[in-house]
Image (cartoon, rainbow, N blue to C red; front, side, top):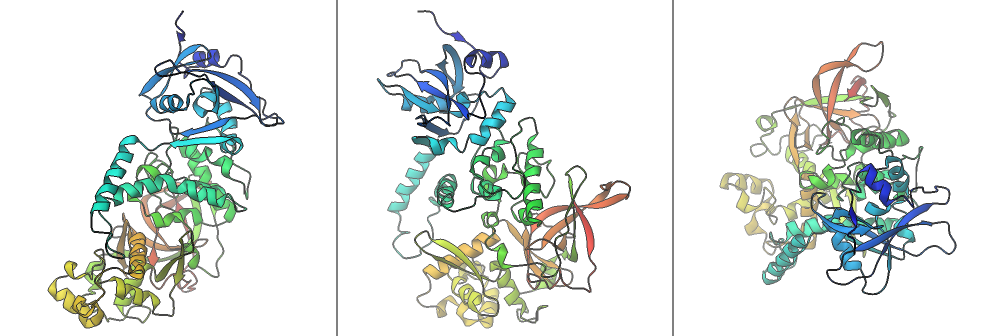
Length: 546
Protein backbone atom coordinates (compact mmCIF):
# COMPACT_ATOMS: atom_id res chain seq x y z
CA UNK A 1 0.00 0.00 0.00
CA UNK A 2 1.39 3.40 -1.04
CA UNK A 3 2.07 5.83 1.80
CA UNK A 4 0.06 9.06 1.62
CA UNK A 5 1.83 12.16 0.34
CA UNK A 6 3.07 14.48 3.13
CA UNK A 7 2.03 18.11 2.65
CA UNK A 8 1.96 21.32 4.70
CA UNK A 9 -1.69 22.32 5.18
CA UNK A 10 -0.48 25.68 6.47
CA UNK A 11 0.91 26.59 3.04
CA UNK A 12 -1.15 27.88 0.12
CA UNK A 13 -0.14 24.93 -2.04
CA UNK A 14 -0.90 22.37 0.66
CA UNK A 15 -4.27 23.89 1.52
CA UNK A 16 -5.22 23.95 -2.16
CA UNK A 17 -4.71 20.18 -2.34
CA UNK A 18 -6.63 19.36 0.85
CA UNK A 19 -9.61 21.61 0.08
CA UNK A 20 -9.68 21.20 -3.73
CA UNK A 21 -13.08 19.44 -3.74
CA UNK A 22 -14.67 21.69 -1.09
CA UNK A 23 -12.88 24.96 -1.77
CA UNK A 24 -15.81 27.35 -2.17
CA UNK A 25 -18.41 28.03 0.53
CA UNK A 26 -21.76 29.66 -0.29
CA UNK A 27 -22.38 32.38 2.29
CA UNK A 28 -26.09 32.68 1.42
CA UNK A 29 -26.57 28.94 2.00
CA UNK A 30 -24.50 29.21 5.20
CA UNK A 31 -22.22 26.47 4.01
CA UNK A 32 -19.55 25.07 6.29
CA UNK A 33 -17.16 22.14 6.14
CA UNK A 34 -17.39 19.15 8.44
CA UNK A 35 -14.94 16.39 9.24
CA UNK A 36 -15.74 12.70 8.88
CA UNK A 37 -13.55 10.92 11.43
CA UNK A 38 -13.15 7.37 10.17
CA UNK A 39 -13.34 4.47 12.65
CA UNK A 40 -10.18 2.91 13.96
CA UNK A 41 -8.48 1.24 16.91
CA UNK A 42 -5.30 1.66 18.89
CA UNK A 43 -2.26 2.75 16.93
CA UNK A 44 -4.03 2.78 13.56
CA UNK A 45 -3.48 6.14 11.80
CA UNK A 46 -6.16 8.75 12.34
CA UNK A 47 -7.88 9.30 9.00
CA UNK A 48 -10.48 11.93 8.07
CA UNK A 49 -12.27 13.36 5.07
CA UNK A 50 -13.69 16.87 4.69
CA UNK A 51 -17.19 17.51 3.33
CA UNK A 52 -19.44 20.50 2.72
CA UNK A 53 -22.92 21.01 4.24
CA UNK A 54 -25.48 23.83 4.47
CA UNK A 55 -26.83 25.09 7.79
CA UNK A 56 -30.05 26.09 6.01
CA UNK A 57 -30.85 22.48 5.08
CA UNK A 58 -34.02 20.88 6.38
CA UNK A 59 -33.54 18.76 8.35
CA UNK A 60 -30.45 20.36 9.83
CA UNK A 61 -27.33 18.23 9.29
CA UNK A 62 -26.15 16.43 12.40
CA UNK A 63 -22.61 17.00 13.59
CA UNK A 64 -20.67 17.35 16.82
CA UNK A 65 -18.57 20.41 17.62
CA UNK A 66 -15.11 20.09 19.13
CA UNK A 67 -14.01 22.94 21.40
CA UNK A 68 -10.34 22.91 22.35
CA UNK A 69 -7.20 25.02 22.47
CA UNK A 70 -4.79 24.53 19.60
CA UNK A 71 -1.77 24.25 21.88
CA UNK A 72 1.88 24.68 20.97
CA UNK A 73 2.12 24.75 17.13
CA UNK A 74 5.62 23.26 17.37
CA UNK A 75 4.37 20.09 19.08
CA UNK A 76 2.60 18.11 16.36
CA UNK A 77 1.42 14.66 15.31
CA UNK A 78 0.47 13.27 11.90
CA UNK A 79 -3.03 12.44 10.66
CA UNK A 80 -4.48 11.71 7.22
CA UNK A 81 -6.93 14.24 5.74
CA UNK A 82 -8.47 13.71 2.30
CA UNK A 83 -5.69 11.24 1.51
CA UNK A 84 -2.80 13.53 2.48
CA UNK A 85 -0.55 13.23 5.51
CA UNK A 86 -0.53 16.49 7.49
CA UNK A 87 0.67 17.74 10.86
CA UNK A 88 -1.81 18.91 13.49
CA UNK A 89 -1.16 20.10 17.03
CA UNK A 90 -0.84 17.50 19.74
CA UNK A 91 -4.01 18.85 21.41
CA UNK A 92 -6.08 18.21 18.28
CA UNK A 93 -4.50 14.81 17.69
CA UNK A 94 -5.29 13.78 21.28
CA UNK A 95 -8.90 14.94 20.98
CA UNK A 96 -9.46 13.06 17.71
CA UNK A 97 -7.79 9.95 19.13
CA UNK A 98 -10.15 9.96 22.12
CA UNK A 99 -13.25 10.65 20.00
CA UNK A 100 -12.55 8.03 17.33
CA UNK A 101 -14.94 5.07 17.48
CA UNK A 102 -14.00 1.44 16.72
CA UNK A 103 -16.66 0.83 14.08
CA UNK A 104 -18.69 3.96 13.38
CA UNK A 105 -17.97 7.18 11.53
CA UNK A 106 -17.99 10.34 13.63
CA UNK A 107 -19.04 13.67 12.08
CA UNK A 108 -17.30 16.66 13.68
CA UNK A 109 -16.79 20.36 13.22
CA UNK A 110 -13.18 21.29 14.04
CA UNK A 111 -12.09 24.85 13.31
CA UNK A 112 -8.43 24.07 12.51
CA UNK A 113 -9.43 21.71 9.69
CA UNK A 114 -12.90 22.84 8.64
CA UNK A 115 -11.72 26.42 8.02
CA UNK A 116 -9.00 27.05 5.45
CA UNK A 117 -6.53 28.85 7.71
CA UNK A 118 -4.54 30.18 4.74
CA UNK A 119 -7.56 32.08 3.35
CA UNK A 120 -7.91 35.25 5.44
CA UNK A 121 -11.24 36.19 3.86
CA UNK A 122 -12.73 32.79 4.60
CA UNK A 123 -11.42 32.93 8.16
CA UNK A 124 -13.22 36.23 8.63
CA UNK A 125 -16.49 34.94 7.19
CA UNK A 126 -16.38 31.65 9.10
CA UNK A 127 -15.39 33.30 12.38
CA UNK A 128 -18.74 35.12 12.40
CA UNK A 129 -20.43 31.69 12.46
CA UNK A 130 -17.95 30.11 14.85
CA UNK A 131 -20.01 30.84 17.97
CA UNK A 132 -23.26 29.84 16.25
CA UNK A 133 -21.97 26.46 15.06
CA UNK A 134 -21.84 24.87 18.55
CA UNK A 135 -25.45 25.97 19.18
CA UNK A 136 -26.56 23.84 16.20
CA UNK A 137 -24.35 20.90 17.07
CA UNK A 138 -25.83 17.75 18.57
CA UNK A 139 -23.07 17.70 21.17
CA UNK A 140 -20.07 19.78 22.15
CA UNK A 141 -16.80 18.24 23.29
CA UNK A 142 -14.51 20.48 25.30
CA UNK A 143 -12.97 22.64 26.29
CA UNK A 144 -9.84 20.50 25.98
CA UNK A 145 -7.83 23.36 27.42
CA UNK A 146 -6.94 22.26 30.94
CA UNK A 147 -3.64 20.43 30.86
CA UNK A 148 -3.28 17.06 32.58
CA UNK A 149 -0.34 18.32 34.63
CA UNK A 150 -2.45 21.20 35.90
CA UNK A 151 -5.36 18.91 36.82
CA UNK A 152 -2.94 16.69 38.73
CA UNK A 153 -1.81 19.78 40.65
CA UNK A 154 -5.43 20.59 41.47
CA UNK A 155 -6.17 17.07 42.71
CA UNK A 156 -2.95 17.06 44.73
CA UNK A 157 -3.90 20.38 46.29
CA UNK A 158 -7.39 19.10 47.05
CA UNK A 159 -5.84 16.11 48.78
CA UNK A 160 -3.75 18.36 51.03
CA UNK A 161 -6.79 20.54 51.59
CA UNK A 162 -8.91 17.64 52.84
CA UNK A 163 -6.18 16.52 55.21
CA UNK A 164 -5.67 20.01 56.58
CA UNK A 165 -7.66 21.42 59.45
CA UNK A 166 -8.62 24.57 57.57
CA UNK A 167 -12.19 23.32 57.06
CA UNK A 168 -12.77 22.56 60.73
CA UNK A 169 -14.05 26.01 61.64
CA UNK A 170 -16.54 28.19 59.84
CA UNK A 171 -14.95 30.89 57.74
CA UNK A 172 -11.41 29.76 58.49
CA UNK A 173 -8.58 31.11 56.41
CA UNK A 174 -8.06 29.57 53.00
CA UNK A 175 -5.48 26.82 52.59
CA UNK A 176 -2.52 28.47 50.80
CA UNK A 177 -1.74 25.28 48.84
CA UNK A 178 -5.22 25.15 47.36
CA UNK A 179 -6.00 28.71 46.34
CA UNK A 180 -3.62 29.20 43.37
CA UNK A 181 -4.83 26.02 41.68
CA UNK A 182 -8.53 26.56 42.31
CA UNK A 183 -8.24 30.18 41.20
CA UNK A 184 -6.71 29.14 37.87
CA UNK A 185 -9.33 26.41 37.43
CA UNK A 186 -12.05 28.94 38.24
CA UNK A 187 -10.70 31.37 35.65
CA UNK A 188 -10.85 28.62 33.06
CA UNK A 189 -14.38 27.50 33.82
CA UNK A 190 -16.17 30.66 35.05
CA UNK A 191 -16.71 32.29 31.64
CA UNK A 192 -18.49 29.16 30.41
CA UNK A 193 -20.99 29.33 33.28
CA UNK A 194 -21.45 33.09 32.96
CA UNK A 195 -22.13 33.02 29.23
CA UNK A 196 -24.39 29.99 29.56
CA UNK A 197 -26.43 31.89 32.14
CA UNK A 198 -26.47 35.16 30.20
CA UNK A 199 -27.56 33.57 26.94
CA UNK A 200 -30.91 33.02 28.64
CA UNK A 201 -31.25 36.81 28.89
CA UNK A 202 -32.08 39.22 26.07
CA UNK A 203 -28.82 41.06 25.35
CA UNK A 204 -25.15 40.17 25.04
CA UNK A 205 -23.23 43.24 23.86
CA UNK A 206 -19.65 42.99 22.62
CA UNK A 207 -18.17 44.25 25.86
CA UNK A 208 -19.91 41.63 27.96
CA UNK A 209 -18.75 38.83 25.66
CA UNK A 210 -15.17 40.15 25.72
CA UNK A 211 -15.01 40.53 29.49
CA UNK A 212 -16.54 37.10 30.16
CA UNK A 213 -14.06 35.37 27.85
CA UNK A 214 -11.04 37.42 28.93
CA UNK A 215 -9.28 34.48 30.59
CA UNK A 216 -9.49 32.25 27.52
CA UNK A 217 -6.50 31.74 25.25
CA UNK A 218 -6.31 32.10 21.48
CA UNK A 219 -3.63 31.02 19.02
CA UNK A 220 -4.24 34.19 17.00
CA UNK A 221 -4.60 37.25 19.26
CA UNK A 222 -7.12 38.74 16.84
CA UNK A 223 -9.51 35.95 17.78
CA UNK A 224 -9.77 37.42 21.29
CA UNK A 225 -12.24 39.76 19.57
CA UNK A 226 -13.25 37.95 16.38
CA UNK A 227 -13.86 34.68 18.20
CA UNK A 228 -16.72 36.08 20.33
CA UNK A 229 -18.57 38.04 17.65
CA UNK A 230 -21.03 35.19 17.12
CA UNK A 231 -22.09 35.50 20.77
CA UNK A 232 -23.01 39.16 20.40
CA UNK A 233 -26.70 39.81 19.77
CA UNK A 234 -26.88 43.48 20.70
CA UNK A 235 -25.05 46.10 18.61
CA UNK A 236 -25.61 49.83 19.11
CA UNK A 237 -23.50 50.60 16.03
CA UNK A 238 -22.53 48.72 12.89
CA UNK A 239 -21.29 45.24 13.90
CA UNK A 240 -17.56 44.58 13.76
CA UNK A 241 -16.71 42.32 10.82
CA UNK A 242 -13.71 39.96 11.11
CA UNK A 243 -10.83 41.15 8.97
CA UNK A 244 -7.70 39.04 9.23
CA UNK A 245 -5.83 41.52 7.05
CA UNK A 246 -5.89 43.97 9.98
CA UNK A 247 -3.27 44.02 12.73
CA UNK A 248 -4.17 43.00 16.28
CA UNK A 249 -3.51 46.53 17.60
CA UNK A 250 -6.00 47.98 15.11
CA UNK A 251 -8.67 45.45 16.07
CA UNK A 252 -8.30 46.06 19.82
CA UNK A 253 -8.48 49.81 19.21
CA UNK A 254 -11.65 49.47 17.12
CA UNK A 255 -13.25 47.27 19.81
CA UNK A 256 -12.64 49.94 22.45
CA UNK A 257 -13.80 52.74 20.17
CA UNK A 258 -16.97 50.83 19.32
CA UNK A 259 -18.03 50.88 22.97
CA UNK A 260 -16.85 54.45 23.61
CA UNK A 261 -18.78 55.86 20.66
CA UNK A 262 -21.82 53.62 21.05
CA UNK A 263 -22.34 54.65 24.68
CA UNK A 264 -20.84 58.15 24.37
CA UNK A 265 -18.93 57.36 27.53
CA UNK A 266 -15.51 56.36 28.82
CA UNK A 267 -16.85 53.15 30.37
CA UNK A 268 -14.35 50.84 28.56
CA UNK A 269 -11.50 52.76 30.20
CA UNK A 270 -12.71 51.51 33.58
CA UNK A 271 -11.40 48.03 32.75
CA UNK A 272 -7.76 47.07 33.52
CA UNK A 273 -5.47 48.88 31.09
CA UNK A 274 -2.23 46.99 31.76
CA UNK A 275 -0.58 45.78 28.56
CA UNK A 276 0.93 42.39 27.73
CA UNK A 277 1.54 41.11 24.20
CA UNK A 278 0.59 44.41 22.55
CA UNK A 279 2.19 47.29 24.47
CA UNK A 280 1.98 49.48 21.36
CA UNK A 281 -1.77 50.05 21.58
CA UNK A 282 -2.85 53.45 22.97
CA UNK A 283 -2.96 53.63 26.76
CA UNK A 284 -6.78 53.89 26.70
CA UNK A 285 -7.16 50.65 24.71
CA UNK A 286 -7.54 47.28 26.42
CA UNK A 287 -4.93 44.69 25.49
CA UNK A 288 -7.12 41.57 25.57
CA UNK A 289 -4.11 39.27 25.91
CA UNK A 290 -3.57 40.59 29.46
CA UNK A 291 -6.78 38.99 30.75
CA UNK A 292 -5.27 35.51 30.49
CA UNK A 293 -1.52 36.03 30.21
CA UNK A 294 -1.03 38.32 33.23
CA UNK A 295 -4.33 37.84 35.06
CA UNK A 296 -2.64 37.71 38.47
CA UNK A 297 -1.34 41.27 37.95
CA UNK A 298 -4.80 42.66 37.23
CA UNK A 299 -7.63 43.72 39.51
CA UNK A 300 -10.42 41.24 38.81
CA UNK A 301 -13.04 43.59 40.29
CA UNK A 302 -12.40 45.95 37.40
CA UNK A 303 -13.85 43.49 34.86
CA UNK A 304 -17.40 44.28 35.95
CA UNK A 305 -19.29 47.55 35.76
CA UNK A 306 -21.59 46.72 38.69
CA UNK A 307 -19.75 48.76 41.31
CA UNK A 308 -18.85 51.63 38.98
CA UNK A 309 -22.54 52.33 38.47
CA UNK A 310 -22.77 53.34 42.13
CA UNK A 311 -20.81 56.50 41.31
CA UNK A 312 -21.04 59.36 38.87
CA UNK A 313 -18.09 61.69 38.44
CA UNK A 314 -20.37 64.41 37.08
CA UNK A 315 -24.11 64.93 37.40
CA UNK A 316 -24.14 67.99 35.14
CA UNK A 317 -21.52 67.68 32.41
CA UNK A 318 -22.16 65.45 29.37
CA UNK A 319 -19.41 63.44 27.72
CA UNK A 320 -17.41 65.29 25.08
CA UNK A 321 -15.35 62.75 23.16
CA UNK A 322 -13.61 63.12 19.80
CA UNK A 323 -11.38 60.59 18.03
CA UNK A 324 -8.15 62.07 16.66
CA UNK A 325 -4.92 61.14 14.91
CA UNK A 326 -6.19 58.09 13.00
CA UNK A 327 -7.75 56.47 16.08
CA UNK A 328 -4.60 56.95 18.18
CA UNK A 329 -5.81 59.79 20.40
CA UNK A 330 -9.02 60.48 22.32
CA UNK A 331 -9.88 64.13 22.89
CA UNK A 332 -11.92 64.45 26.08
CA UNK A 333 -12.85 67.17 28.54
CA UNK A 334 -12.83 67.28 32.30
CA UNK A 335 -11.54 68.99 35.41
CA UNK A 336 -8.11 68.35 36.90
CA UNK A 337 -8.31 67.85 40.63
CA UNK A 338 -4.77 67.46 41.82
CA UNK A 339 -1.39 65.77 41.54
CA UNK A 340 0.04 62.93 43.59
CA UNK A 341 2.47 63.75 46.36
CA UNK A 342 4.49 61.61 48.75
CA UNK A 343 1.46 60.81 50.83
CA UNK A 344 3.26 59.02 53.64
CA UNK A 345 4.94 62.34 54.58
CA UNK A 346 1.58 64.06 54.96
CA UNK A 347 -0.82 61.35 56.10
CA UNK A 348 0.47 60.37 59.57
CA UNK A 349 -2.59 58.25 60.31
CA UNK A 350 -0.92 56.58 63.28
CA UNK A 351 -0.15 59.92 64.95
CA UNK A 352 -3.30 61.93 64.32
CA UNK A 353 -6.08 59.58 63.17
CA UNK A 354 -8.77 62.08 64.20
CA UNK A 355 -7.33 64.94 62.13
CA UNK A 356 -10.17 66.41 60.02
CA UNK A 357 -10.29 65.30 56.38
CA UNK A 358 -11.53 67.56 53.57
CA UNK A 359 -15.06 66.20 54.01
CA UNK A 360 -15.06 67.03 57.72
CA UNK A 361 -14.75 63.43 58.90
CA UNK A 362 -11.58 62.06 60.55
CA UNK A 363 -8.72 61.00 58.29
CA UNK A 364 -8.98 57.44 59.59
CA UNK A 365 -12.55 57.29 58.25
CA UNK A 366 -11.34 58.40 54.82
CA UNK A 367 -8.64 55.73 55.05
CA UNK A 368 -10.89 52.73 55.62
CA UNK A 369 -13.49 54.04 53.17
CA UNK A 370 -10.79 54.08 50.49
CA UNK A 371 -10.01 50.43 51.24
CA UNK A 372 -13.60 49.37 50.52
CA UNK A 373 -14.74 52.33 48.37
CA UNK A 374 -17.27 52.86 51.17
CA UNK A 375 -19.11 49.75 49.95
CA UNK A 376 -20.89 46.98 51.76
CA UNK A 377 -20.83 43.69 49.87
CA UNK A 378 -23.53 41.07 50.23
CA UNK A 379 -23.88 37.69 48.55
CA UNK A 380 -27.26 36.03 48.20
CA UNK A 381 -29.37 33.74 46.08
CA UNK A 382 -28.63 30.23 44.81
CA UNK A 383 -26.15 31.68 42.29
CA UNK A 384 -24.38 33.60 45.09
CA UNK A 385 -24.72 36.87 43.20
CA UNK A 386 -22.63 39.69 44.64
CA UNK A 387 -24.35 42.99 45.39
CA UNK A 388 -22.47 46.24 46.01
CA UNK A 389 -24.19 48.83 48.19
CA UNK A 390 -22.80 52.18 49.21
CA UNK A 391 -22.99 52.89 52.91
CA UNK A 392 -23.08 56.63 52.36
CA UNK A 393 -24.76 58.29 55.33
CA UNK A 394 -24.61 55.14 57.47
CA UNK A 395 -22.00 53.36 59.59
CA UNK A 396 -22.52 50.02 57.83
CA UNK A 397 -19.15 49.91 56.08
CA UNK A 398 -17.33 50.99 59.25
CA UNK A 399 -18.99 48.29 61.34
CA UNK A 400 -18.00 45.72 58.72
CA UNK A 401 -14.44 47.07 58.70
CA UNK A 402 -14.10 46.97 62.50
CA UNK A 403 -15.31 43.36 62.55
CA UNK A 404 -12.90 42.42 59.75
CA UNK A 405 -9.82 44.32 60.96
CA UNK A 406 -8.67 42.19 63.93
CA UNK A 407 -9.61 38.88 62.27
CA UNK A 408 -8.09 38.91 58.80
CA UNK A 409 -4.41 38.30 58.16
CA UNK A 410 -4.75 40.76 55.28
CA UNK A 411 -5.71 43.60 57.62
CA UNK A 412 -3.02 46.01 58.78
CA UNK A 413 -4.90 46.14 62.09
CA UNK A 414 -4.45 42.42 62.71
CA UNK A 415 -2.44 42.07 65.97
CA UNK A 416 0.27 40.02 64.27
CA UNK A 417 0.88 42.81 61.78
CA UNK A 418 1.10 45.77 64.17
CA UNK A 419 3.88 47.09 66.31
CA UNK A 420 3.00 47.59 69.94
CA UNK A 421 2.93 51.37 69.44
CA UNK A 422 0.61 51.17 66.42
CA UNK A 423 -1.62 48.66 68.15
CA UNK A 424 -2.02 50.98 71.12
CA UNK A 425 -2.88 53.85 68.76
CA UNK A 426 -5.53 51.72 67.03
CA UNK A 427 -7.05 50.63 70.33
CA UNK A 428 -7.20 54.24 71.55
CA UNK A 429 -9.18 55.08 68.44
CA UNK A 430 -11.60 52.15 68.84
CA UNK A 431 -11.26 49.55 71.63
CA UNK A 432 -12.71 46.91 69.30
CA UNK A 433 -9.38 46.80 67.47
CA UNK A 434 -7.91 45.10 70.56
CA UNK A 435 -7.99 41.37 69.91
CA UNK A 436 -8.14 40.72 73.66
CA UNK A 437 -11.38 42.72 73.82
CA UNK A 438 -12.83 40.75 70.90
CA UNK A 439 -13.56 37.45 72.57
CA UNK A 440 -15.19 35.05 70.14
CA UNK A 441 -14.09 37.07 67.10
CA UNK A 442 -10.72 35.50 66.46
CA UNK A 443 -12.17 33.35 63.65
CA UNK A 444 -13.90 34.54 60.51
CA UNK A 445 -17.65 34.79 60.34
CA UNK A 446 -19.44 34.81 57.00
CA UNK A 447 -19.74 38.62 57.30
CA UNK A 448 -16.04 39.21 57.99
CA UNK A 449 -15.06 36.81 55.23
CA UNK A 450 -17.20 38.74 52.71
CA UNK A 451 -15.62 42.00 53.88
CA UNK A 452 -12.19 40.43 53.40
CA UNK A 453 -13.15 39.47 49.85
CA UNK A 454 -14.39 43.01 49.17
CA UNK A 455 -11.30 44.78 50.50
CA UNK A 456 -8.94 42.18 49.04
CA UNK A 457 -10.59 42.52 45.64
CA UNK A 458 -10.73 46.30 45.53
CA UNK A 459 -7.17 46.82 46.75
CA UNK A 460 -5.57 44.07 44.62
CA UNK A 461 -2.74 45.52 42.50
CA UNK A 462 -3.46 49.08 43.62
CA UNK A 463 -1.62 51.78 45.54
CA UNK A 464 -2.88 54.26 48.11
CA UNK A 465 -2.04 57.90 47.43
CA UNK A 466 -2.56 61.41 48.68
CA UNK A 467 -2.83 64.53 46.56
CA UNK A 468 -1.17 67.84 47.27
CA UNK A 469 -4.46 69.33 48.45
CA UNK A 470 -5.09 66.46 50.86
CA UNK A 471 -7.38 64.06 49.00
CA UNK A 472 -6.84 60.40 49.86
CA UNK A 473 -7.38 57.72 47.24
CA UNK A 474 -6.68 54.29 45.83
CA UNK A 475 -5.32 54.00 42.29
CA UNK A 476 -3.23 51.93 39.87
CA UNK A 477 -0.14 50.24 41.26
CA UNK A 478 2.00 52.03 38.65
CA UNK A 479 1.10 55.45 40.08
CA UNK A 480 4.01 57.69 41.00
CA UNK A 481 4.62 61.17 42.38
CA UNK A 482 3.56 63.82 39.87
CA UNK A 483 0.73 61.84 38.26
CA UNK A 484 -2.54 63.72 37.96
CA UNK A 485 -6.08 63.01 39.14
CA UNK A 486 -8.73 63.98 36.58
CA UNK A 487 -12.50 63.86 36.61
CA UNK A 488 -13.28 63.28 32.93
CA UNK A 489 -16.78 63.88 31.62
CA UNK A 490 -18.46 60.66 30.51
CA UNK A 491 -16.98 58.43 33.22
CA UNK A 492 -18.14 56.97 36.51
CA UNK A 493 -14.76 57.14 38.22
CA UNK A 494 -11.85 59.60 38.36
CA UNK A 495 -8.75 58.70 36.33
CA UNK A 496 -5.03 58.79 36.98
CA UNK A 497 -3.24 60.41 34.02
CA UNK A 498 0.46 60.90 33.38
CA UNK A 499 1.87 63.70 31.26
CA UNK A 500 3.96 62.32 28.39
CA UNK A 501 6.07 65.50 28.38
CA UNK A 502 5.80 65.66 24.60
CA UNK A 503 3.41 67.16 22.09
CA UNK A 504 1.96 66.12 18.76
CA UNK A 505 -0.35 67.62 16.16
CA UNK A 506 -3.57 65.67 16.60
CA UNK A 507 -5.94 68.18 15.00
CA UNK A 508 -4.85 69.48 11.61
CA UNK A 509 -4.08 73.18 11.69
CA UNK A 510 -4.39 73.58 15.46
CA UNK A 511 -0.74 73.08 16.35
CA UNK A 512 0.78 70.53 18.67
CA UNK A 513 -1.07 69.39 21.79
CA UNK A 514 0.25 67.96 25.08
CA UNK A 515 -0.48 64.25 25.47
CA UNK A 516 -1.39 62.15 28.50
CA UNK A 517 -1.24 58.44 29.24
CA UNK A 518 -4.17 56.77 31.01
CA UNK A 519 -3.00 54.62 33.93
CA UNK A 520 -6.51 53.67 35.05
CA UNK A 521 -9.39 54.54 37.31
CA UNK A 522 -9.06 55.54 40.96
CA UNK A 523 -11.22 56.05 44.02
CA UNK A 524 -10.78 59.51 45.56
CA UNK A 525 -12.65 59.93 48.81
CA UNK A 526 -14.78 63.04 48.65
CA UNK A 527 -14.71 63.30 44.84
CA UNK A 528 -16.98 60.46 43.75
CA UNK A 529 -20.31 62.28 43.43
CA UNK A 530 -19.61 65.32 41.30
CA UNK A 531 -17.82 67.34 43.97
CA UNK A 532 -14.91 67.98 41.60
CA UNK A 533 -16.33 67.52 38.11
CA UNK A 534 -19.22 69.89 38.84
CA UNK A 535 -17.11 72.44 40.73
CA UNK A 536 -17.40 75.60 38.61
CA UNK A 537 -14.41 77.10 40.41
CA UNK A 538 -12.23 74.62 38.51
CA UNK A 539 -11.73 75.26 34.77
CA UNK A 540 -12.94 72.76 32.17
CA UNK A 541 -9.87 71.59 30.25
CA UNK A 542 -9.30 69.59 27.09
CA UNK A 543 -7.00 66.60 27.48
CA UNK A 544 -5.58 64.35 24.76
CA UNK A 545 -5.28 60.69 25.73
CA UNK A 546 -2.61 58.83 23.76
